[in-house]
Image (cartoon, rainbow, N blue to C red; front, side):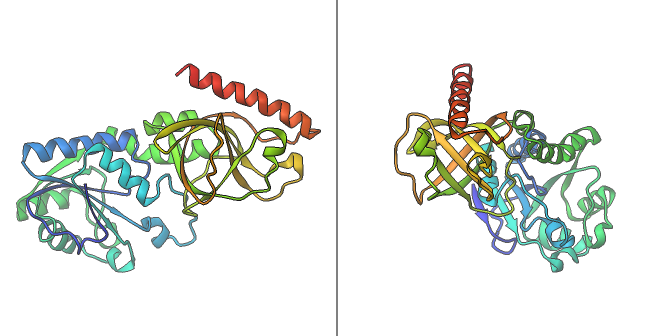
Amino acid sequence: MKIFSSIQEFSATSGTVVTLGTFDGVHVGHRQILHKLIAASKVLKCESLVLTFFPHPRMVLQQDVQIKLLNTIDEKSFLLEEIGIDNLVIHPFDAAFSKLTAEEFVKNILVDKFNVKKIIIGYDHRFGINRTANIDDLIRFGEQYGFEVEQISAQEIDAVSVSSTKIRNSLDAGNVALANQYLGYSYFFSGIVTEGKKLGRTIGFPTANIQIDQPYKLIPKNGVYIVSAVIDHVTVYGMMNIGVNPTVGGTDKSIEIHFFDFNQDLYSRSVTVSVHEKIREEQKFPSVEALKQQLEKDKQTSLHYFTTL
């Protein structure tokens, strides 16, 4: 997959079949659209192209909105490449772009830059300045400039538009299992392993403290989770605590992972963590010994989970 950091960077070497959107999560609903895109590009002997935006348009148009996203740009690129998209254009969304008229967008970008032969878009998609143009306008432009328009049905759009919000809500509630069902894969995040207080190792549960790369990345609700990671091409299993460590008087939120049967030094390394299921809420125990006993139970719960996959 070829990745372009703006529309201007892209130069069409053949016709393209295009879809556009934020595709946050690249979840099961999005994948229906993306598989249609790939299928259509093969029929028309064109290249598939996804146009997406960063920052998220809501970050620009509604600056008071503190939106948390399911994917960083790197994660989204990885997922789209896995699906088999030919071209990904990540355009910087700004006020100037939002002021393009519908015809400017169609003529200057879709036709002149992308050499579009077909666009696959939702029946309720609106575009152009103040979102004034609709699917009927796009069909009219298609007839004028010589490209097909395929509408995604209301039913399919409902599946897509609802799911990103449902996934965010599920993760905010700690319901990772449900979020993963909507995503079609285990929710994941990446971060750098930093030095912590090293309290875990004193009770037999050394942890890797993860510092998240991107502040806009959504992190699940505080609690204890079953996780895995691929380190040096080997899958390792573990359990993760997101929270403040109240038993030892902690106040700062942290992400700490105890990997089973693993003793490598991970400091300063980037680790990608897949989150599978929540075990329990974070809680304050009456003693460190009581915490240790619970952690042993959490470990057994996690190990049992992986043996049943």
